[in-house]
Image (cartoon, rainbow, N blue to C red; front, side):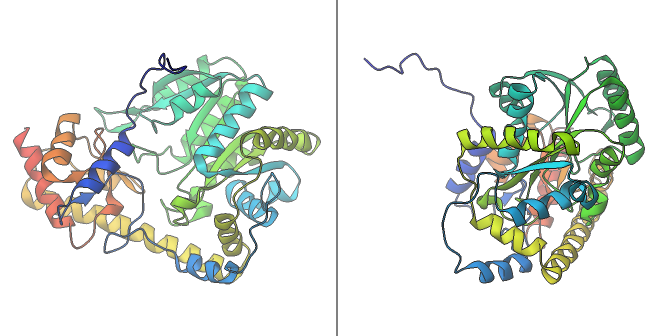
Length: 398
Protein backbone atom coordinates (compact mmCIF):
# COMPACT_ATOMS: atom_id res chain seq x y z
CA UNK A 1 0.00 0.00 0.00
CA UNK A 2 1.40 3.37 -1.01
CA UNK A 3 0.90 6.67 0.77
CA UNK A 4 0.35 8.25 -2.64
CA UNK A 5 -2.39 6.13 -4.24
CA UNK A 6 -4.96 8.85 -3.64
CA UNK A 7 -3.15 11.30 -5.93
CA UNK A 8 -4.84 12.25 -9.19
CA UNK A 9 -3.11 12.98 -12.48
CA UNK A 10 -2.71 16.66 -13.29
CA UNK A 11 -3.63 18.25 -16.64
CA UNK A 12 -1.07 17.78 -19.39
CA UNK A 13 1.27 20.73 -19.79
CA UNK A 14 0.73 21.72 -23.41
CA UNK A 15 4.19 23.15 -24.06
CA UNK A 16 6.03 20.24 -22.48
CA UNK A 17 3.87 17.93 -24.59
CA UNK A 18 4.68 19.89 -27.75
CA UNK A 19 8.39 19.81 -26.89
CA UNK A 20 8.33 16.03 -26.45
CA UNK A 21 6.58 15.54 -29.81
CA UNK A 22 8.96 17.96 -31.52
CA UNK A 23 12.02 16.17 -30.15
CA UNK A 24 10.64 12.80 -31.25
CA UNK A 25 9.92 14.04 -34.79
CA UNK A 26 12.82 13.14 -37.09
CA UNK A 27 11.35 15.03 -40.08
CA UNK A 28 14.16 17.18 -41.46
CA UNK A 29 11.95 20.12 -42.42
CA UNK A 30 9.74 20.33 -39.34
CA UNK A 31 8.94 23.87 -38.25
CA UNK A 32 8.93 24.99 -34.62
CA UNK A 33 6.83 28.10 -33.97
CA UNK A 34 5.72 27.02 -30.51
CA UNK A 35 7.67 28.31 -27.50
CA UNK A 36 8.61 31.98 -27.19
CA UNK A 37 12.26 31.65 -28.14
CA UNK A 38 13.97 34.15 -30.43
CA UNK A 39 15.79 32.12 -33.08
CA UNK A 40 18.44 33.20 -35.54
CA UNK A 41 18.48 32.90 -39.34
CA UNK A 42 19.15 29.15 -39.22
CA UNK A 43 16.66 28.34 -36.49
CA UNK A 44 18.98 28.17 -33.49
CA UNK A 45 18.35 30.07 -30.24
CA UNK A 46 20.08 33.41 -30.73
CA UNK A 47 23.12 34.16 -28.59
CA UNK A 48 23.70 37.86 -28.03
CA UNK A 49 27.33 38.88 -28.75
CA UNK A 50 27.32 40.80 -25.46
CA UNK A 51 26.44 37.57 -23.66
CA UNK A 52 29.30 35.72 -25.36
CA UNK A 53 31.74 38.40 -24.24
CA UNK A 54 30.31 38.52 -20.71
CA UNK A 55 30.67 34.75 -20.35
CA UNK A 56 34.34 34.96 -21.29
CA UNK A 57 34.89 37.52 -18.53
CA UNK A 58 33.31 35.51 -15.71
CA UNK A 59 34.54 32.05 -16.63
CA UNK A 60 36.98 31.95 -13.69
CA UNK A 61 34.49 33.17 -11.07
CA UNK A 62 33.99 30.99 -7.98
CA UNK A 63 30.85 28.99 -7.26
CA UNK A 64 30.20 30.05 -3.67
CA UNK A 65 26.72 30.82 -2.37
CA UNK A 66 25.29 34.26 -3.07
CA UNK A 67 23.28 36.45 -0.77
CA UNK A 68 19.64 35.44 -0.48
CA UNK A 69 18.43 38.58 -2.29
CA UNK A 70 20.83 38.04 -5.17
CA UNK A 71 24.00 39.47 -6.68
CA UNK A 72 23.80 43.16 -5.83
CA UNK A 73 25.17 44.52 -9.13
CA UNK A 74 22.72 42.35 -11.05
CA UNK A 75 19.75 43.32 -8.88
CA UNK A 76 20.44 47.07 -9.08
CA UNK A 77 21.09 46.95 -12.83
CA UNK A 78 17.94 44.92 -13.42
CA UNK A 79 15.87 47.31 -11.30
CA UNK A 80 17.01 50.31 -13.34
CA UNK A 81 15.90 48.55 -16.54
CA UNK A 82 12.57 47.47 -15.04
CA UNK A 83 11.37 50.54 -13.13
CA UNK A 84 13.79 53.34 -14.03
CA UNK A 85 16.83 54.89 -12.39
CA UNK A 86 14.97 57.60 -10.48
CA UNK A 87 12.95 55.25 -8.29
CA UNK A 88 16.05 53.15 -7.60
CA UNK A 89 18.21 56.16 -6.73
CA UNK A 90 15.45 57.54 -4.49
CA UNK A 91 15.44 54.33 -2.45
CA UNK A 92 11.87 53.38 -3.34
CA UNK A 93 12.47 49.92 -4.82
CA UNK A 94 12.77 46.59 -3.01
CA UNK A 95 14.22 43.92 -5.30
CA UNK A 96 15.03 40.23 -5.06
CA UNK A 97 16.69 37.96 -7.62
CA UNK A 98 14.48 35.01 -8.59
CA UNK A 99 14.54 31.76 -10.52
CA UNK A 100 13.37 33.11 -13.87
CA UNK A 101 10.29 35.18 -14.60
CA UNK A 102 8.02 32.43 -13.29
CA UNK A 103 9.88 32.53 -9.99
CA UNK A 104 9.43 36.30 -9.90
CA UNK A 105 5.69 35.96 -10.52
CA UNK A 106 5.44 33.31 -7.82
CA UNK A 107 7.41 35.34 -5.28
CA UNK A 108 5.29 38.39 -6.03
CA UNK A 109 2.07 36.43 -5.61
CA UNK A 110 3.23 34.91 -2.32
CA UNK A 111 4.24 38.35 -1.04
CA UNK A 112 0.90 39.92 -1.92
CA UNK A 113 -1.24 37.03 -0.65
CA UNK A 114 0.64 35.87 2.44
CA UNK A 115 2.25 39.08 3.68
CA UNK A 116 -0.15 41.77 2.46
CA UNK A 117 -3.43 39.88 2.54
CA UNK A 118 -4.24 40.82 -1.08
CA UNK A 119 -5.88 37.65 -2.33
CA UNK A 120 -8.12 38.87 -5.16
CA UNK A 121 -6.34 38.67 -8.52
CA UNK A 122 -7.75 39.77 -11.88
CA UNK A 123 -6.46 38.40 -15.16
CA UNK A 124 -7.38 39.35 -18.72
CA UNK A 125 -7.98 36.47 -21.11
CA UNK A 126 -6.56 34.89 -23.10
CA UNK A 127 -3.34 34.84 -21.10
CA UNK A 128 -0.16 32.92 -20.44
CA UNK A 129 -1.53 29.61 -19.05
CA UNK A 130 0.89 29.45 -16.12
CA UNK A 131 -0.66 32.45 -14.37
CA UNK A 132 -3.69 30.51 -13.17
CA UNK A 133 -1.98 27.64 -11.30
CA UNK A 134 0.70 30.04 -10.06
CA UNK A 135 -1.86 32.35 -8.45
CA UNK A 136 -4.03 29.54 -7.08
CA UNK A 137 -1.05 27.68 -5.58
CA UNK A 138 0.04 30.93 -3.93
CA UNK A 139 -3.29 31.09 -2.12
CA UNK A 140 -4.95 33.73 -4.26
CA UNK A 141 -8.37 33.71 -5.88
CA UNK A 142 -8.74 34.51 -9.56
CA UNK A 143 -11.32 36.47 -11.54
CA UNK A 144 -11.06 36.90 -15.30
CA UNK A 145 -12.25 39.41 -17.87
CA UNK A 146 -12.01 39.56 -21.65
CA UNK A 147 -8.81 41.33 -22.64
CA UNK A 148 -8.90 40.44 -26.33
CA UNK A 149 -11.97 40.22 -28.56
CA UNK A 150 -11.23 37.31 -30.90
CA UNK A 151 -13.96 38.37 -33.34
CA UNK A 152 -12.76 41.96 -33.71
CA UNK A 153 -9.09 40.92 -33.37
CA UNK A 154 -8.58 43.80 -30.94
CA UNK A 155 -8.35 44.61 -27.25
CA UNK A 156 -11.70 44.86 -25.49
CA UNK A 157 -10.79 47.98 -23.56
CA UNK A 158 -14.34 48.44 -22.33
CA UNK A 159 -14.05 45.08 -20.55
CA UNK A 160 -10.70 46.12 -19.07
CA UNK A 161 -12.24 49.34 -17.73
CA UNK A 162 -15.30 47.52 -16.38
CA UNK A 163 -13.15 45.01 -14.49
CA UNK A 164 -11.08 47.80 -12.94
CA UNK A 165 -14.16 49.73 -11.87
CA UNK A 166 -15.94 46.79 -10.25
CA UNK A 167 -12.94 45.31 -8.43
CA UNK A 168 -12.71 45.74 -4.67
CA UNK A 169 -9.93 47.97 -3.30
CA UNK A 170 -6.63 46.13 -2.81
CA UNK A 171 -7.39 43.80 -5.71
CA UNK A 172 -4.38 42.83 -7.83
CA UNK A 173 -4.43 43.19 -11.63
CA UNK A 174 -1.88 41.11 -13.51
CA UNK A 175 -0.70 42.91 -16.65
CA UNK A 176 1.83 41.95 -19.29
CA UNK A 177 4.09 44.91 -19.95
CA UNK A 178 4.56 44.32 -23.68
CA UNK A 179 4.53 41.60 -26.35
CA UNK A 180 1.33 40.25 -24.85
CA UNK A 181 1.29 36.47 -24.75
CA UNK A 182 -0.58 35.11 -26.66
CA UNK A 183 -2.33 38.02 -28.42
CA UNK A 184 0.71 40.15 -29.37
CA UNK A 185 -1.58 43.14 -28.81
CA UNK A 186 -0.67 45.69 -26.14
CA UNK A 187 -2.49 48.62 -24.60
CA UNK A 188 -1.63 52.05 -25.98
CA UNK A 189 -0.01 54.62 -23.69
CA UNK A 190 -3.30 56.50 -23.64
CA UNK A 191 -5.05 53.35 -22.42
CA UNK A 192 -2.32 52.65 -19.88
CA UNK A 193 -2.74 56.18 -18.54
CA UNK A 194 -6.45 55.63 -18.05
CA UNK A 195 -5.78 52.29 -16.35
CA UNK A 196 -3.34 53.97 -13.96
CA UNK A 197 -5.85 56.69 -13.11
CA UNK A 198 -8.61 54.19 -12.31
CA UNK A 199 -6.23 52.08 -10.22
CA UNK A 200 -5.11 55.12 -8.25
CA UNK A 201 -8.69 56.19 -7.59
CA UNK A 202 -9.81 52.72 -6.51
CA UNK A 203 -6.78 51.60 -4.51
CA UNK A 204 -5.81 48.71 -6.80
CA UNK A 205 -2.41 47.08 -7.23
CA UNK A 206 -0.75 46.61 -10.63
CA UNK A 207 1.38 43.47 -11.02
CA UNK A 208 3.44 43.75 -14.22
CA UNK A 209 4.98 40.72 -15.90
CA UNK A 210 7.95 42.02 -17.89
CA UNK A 211 9.18 39.08 -19.96
CA UNK A 212 9.87 40.72 -23.34
CA UNK A 213 11.13 44.24 -22.63
CA UNK A 214 13.03 45.51 -25.67
CA UNK A 215 11.69 42.95 -28.13
CA UNK A 216 8.67 44.95 -29.31
CA UNK A 217 10.01 48.37 -30.29
CA UNK A 218 13.68 47.48 -29.99
CA UNK A 219 14.00 49.91 -27.07
CA UNK A 220 13.92 48.85 -23.42
CA UNK A 221 12.97 52.42 -22.53
CA UNK A 222 10.04 52.60 -24.93
CA UNK A 223 8.78 49.12 -24.07
CA UNK A 224 9.12 49.96 -20.38
CA UNK A 225 7.21 53.25 -20.64
CA UNK A 226 3.98 51.95 -19.04
CA UNK A 227 5.80 50.92 -15.85
CA UNK A 228 7.70 54.20 -15.83
CA UNK A 229 4.42 56.10 -16.11
CA UNK A 230 2.91 54.20 -13.16
CA UNK A 231 6.03 54.94 -11.11
CA UNK A 232 5.94 58.64 -12.02
CA UNK A 233 2.27 58.75 -10.99
CA UNK A 234 3.28 57.60 -7.52
CA UNK A 235 1.58 54.20 -7.69
CA UNK A 236 2.99 51.31 -5.70
CA UNK A 237 3.48 48.44 -8.14
CA UNK A 238 4.99 44.98 -8.43
CA UNK A 239 7.15 44.02 -11.43
CA UNK A 240 8.22 40.46 -12.27
CA UNK A 241 11.18 40.66 -14.64
CA UNK A 242 12.84 38.01 -16.80
CA UNK A 243 15.98 38.00 -18.94
CA UNK A 244 15.12 34.72 -20.67
CA UNK A 245 13.92 36.45 -23.83
CA UNK A 246 15.60 39.85 -23.74
CA UNK A 247 19.10 38.38 -23.34
CA UNK A 248 18.48 34.88 -24.68
CA UNK A 249 19.24 33.20 -21.34
CA UNK A 250 16.26 30.84 -21.31
CA UNK A 251 17.86 27.91 -19.53
CA UNK A 252 19.74 30.00 -16.97
CA UNK A 253 16.47 31.08 -15.25
CA UNK A 254 17.39 34.67 -14.50
CA UNK A 255 14.64 36.84 -13.07
CA UNK A 256 14.04 39.56 -10.53
CA UNK A 257 11.07 40.83 -8.54
CA UNK A 258 10.76 44.56 -7.91
CA UNK A 259 8.29 46.25 -5.58
CA UNK A 260 8.08 50.01 -6.01
CA UNK A 261 6.96 51.59 -2.75
CA UNK A 262 8.44 54.49 -0.73
CA UNK A 263 11.52 55.11 1.38
CA UNK A 264 9.76 54.41 4.67
CA UNK A 265 8.49 50.95 3.65
CA UNK A 266 11.17 49.73 1.25
CA UNK A 267 13.18 47.88 3.90
CA UNK A 268 10.04 46.28 5.32
CA UNK A 269 9.10 45.00 1.87
CA UNK A 270 12.63 43.79 1.16
CA UNK A 271 12.65 41.89 4.46
CA UNK A 272 9.45 40.05 3.50
CA UNK A 273 10.87 39.11 0.09
CA UNK A 274 14.05 37.86 1.75
CA UNK A 275 12.06 35.75 4.22
CA UNK A 276 9.93 34.11 1.53
CA UNK A 277 12.83 33.50 -0.86
CA UNK A 278 15.01 32.03 1.88
CA UNK A 279 12.37 29.38 2.60
CA UNK A 280 11.88 28.58 -1.09
CA UNK A 281 15.33 28.75 -2.67
CA UNK A 282 17.75 29.81 0.07
CA UNK A 283 20.31 31.31 -2.33
CA UNK A 284 19.95 32.75 -5.80
CA UNK A 285 21.67 31.18 -8.85
CA UNK A 286 24.88 32.86 -9.94
CA UNK A 287 26.06 32.14 -13.48
CA UNK A 288 23.31 33.75 -15.54
CA UNK A 289 23.00 36.66 -13.12
CA UNK A 290 26.72 37.38 -13.48
CA UNK A 291 26.31 37.40 -17.26
CA UNK A 292 23.44 39.89 -17.07
CA UNK A 293 25.24 42.01 -14.49
CA UNK A 294 28.32 42.20 -16.71
CA UNK A 295 26.24 43.31 -19.70
CA UNK A 296 24.16 45.87 -17.82
CA UNK A 297 27.06 47.44 -15.95
CA UNK A 298 29.48 47.77 -18.87
CA UNK A 299 28.70 50.69 -21.20
CA UNK A 300 30.07 48.99 -24.31
CA UNK A 301 28.25 45.69 -23.74
CA UNK A 302 25.03 47.40 -22.69
CA UNK A 303 25.01 49.53 -25.84
CA UNK A 304 25.79 46.48 -27.96
CA UNK A 305 22.87 44.63 -26.37
CA UNK A 306 20.51 47.53 -27.03
CA UNK A 307 21.68 47.73 -30.64
CA UNK A 308 21.00 44.01 -31.09
CA UNK A 309 17.50 44.51 -29.71
CA UNK A 310 16.79 47.06 -32.45
CA UNK A 311 18.04 44.56 -35.05
CA UNK A 312 15.79 41.84 -33.63
CA UNK A 313 12.77 44.14 -33.60
CA UNK A 314 13.41 45.13 -37.22
CA UNK A 315 13.74 41.52 -38.32
CA UNK A 316 10.44 40.61 -36.64
CA UNK A 317 8.71 43.49 -38.44
CA UNK A 318 10.14 42.39 -41.79
CA UNK A 319 9.07 38.79 -41.16
CA UNK A 320 5.52 39.98 -40.52
CA UNK A 321 5.49 41.98 -43.75
CA UNK A 322 6.76 38.99 -45.71
CA UNK A 323 4.07 36.68 -44.32
CA UNK A 324 1.34 39.15 -45.27
CA UNK A 325 2.86 39.58 -48.73
CA UNK A 326 2.94 35.82 -49.38
CA UNK A 327 -0.61 35.23 -48.10
CA UNK A 328 -1.85 38.13 -50.22
CA UNK A 329 -0.11 36.75 -53.32
CA UNK A 330 -1.68 33.36 -52.71
CA UNK A 331 -5.12 34.85 -52.19
CA UNK A 332 -5.48 33.15 -48.82
CA UNK A 333 -9.13 33.58 -47.77
CA UNK A 334 -9.61 36.02 -44.90
CA UNK A 335 -8.09 39.21 -43.55
CA UNK A 336 -4.52 38.59 -42.41
CA UNK A 337 -3.50 42.18 -41.65
CA UNK A 338 -3.35 41.16 -37.98
CA UNK A 339 0.12 39.81 -38.69
CA UNK A 340 1.46 43.34 -39.18
CA UNK A 341 -0.85 45.00 -36.65
CA UNK A 342 0.43 42.80 -33.83
CA UNK A 343 3.91 43.23 -32.36
CA UNK A 344 6.74 41.32 -30.77
CA UNK A 345 7.51 37.62 -31.03
CA UNK A 346 4.01 36.33 -31.59
CA UNK A 347 1.22 36.33 -34.12
CA UNK A 348 -2.17 35.39 -32.69
CA UNK A 349 -3.22 34.02 -36.04
CA UNK A 350 -6.85 33.14 -35.47
CA UNK A 351 -6.35 29.51 -36.48
CA UNK A 352 -8.77 27.20 -34.70
CA UNK A 353 -7.72 24.46 -32.32
CA UNK A 354 -8.61 21.91 -34.99
CA UNK A 355 -6.43 23.63 -37.59
CA UNK A 356 -3.53 23.98 -35.15
CA UNK A 357 -3.64 20.31 -34.23
CA UNK A 358 -3.69 19.28 -37.90
CA UNK A 359 -0.63 21.44 -38.54
CA UNK A 360 1.23 19.79 -35.68
CA UNK A 361 0.10 16.19 -36.08
CA UNK A 362 0.09 15.96 -39.89
CA UNK A 363 2.18 18.81 -41.30
CA UNK A 364 5.06 18.88 -38.78
CA UNK A 365 4.43 22.52 -37.87
CA UNK A 366 4.53 22.82 -34.09
CA UNK A 367 2.40 25.46 -32.40
CA UNK A 368 -0.02 25.63 -29.45
CA UNK A 369 -3.67 24.84 -30.03
CA UNK A 370 -4.71 28.50 -29.60
CA UNK A 371 -3.07 29.30 -32.94
CA UNK A 372 -0.31 31.48 -31.51
CA UNK A 373 2.70 31.52 -33.83
CA UNK A 374 6.21 32.48 -32.78
CA UNK A 375 7.32 34.29 -35.91
CA UNK A 376 10.91 34.28 -34.67
CA UNK A 377 10.89 30.57 -35.51
CA UNK A 378 10.62 31.47 -39.21
CA UNK A 379 13.61 32.14 -41.42
CA UNK A 380 14.66 32.12 -45.07
CA UNK A 381 14.84 28.32 -45.06
CA UNK A 382 11.30 27.63 -43.85
CA UNK A 383 9.10 30.71 -44.21
CA UNK A 384 7.89 29.99 -47.75
CA UNK A 385 6.95 26.44 -46.82
CA UNK A 386 5.21 27.75 -43.71
CA UNK A 387 3.15 30.19 -45.79
CA UNK A 388 2.22 27.39 -48.21
CA UNK A 389 1.05 25.16 -45.37
CA UNK A 390 -0.80 28.02 -43.67
CA UNK A 391 -2.60 28.83 -46.92
CA UNK A 392 -3.56 25.18 -47.44
CA UNK A 393 -4.99 24.72 -43.94
CA UNK A 394 -7.07 27.89 -44.27
CA UNK A 395 -8.38 26.90 -47.71
CA UNK A 396 -9.20 23.36 -46.58
CA UNK A 397 -11.28 24.65 -43.67
CA UNK A 398 -12.98 27.57 -45.44
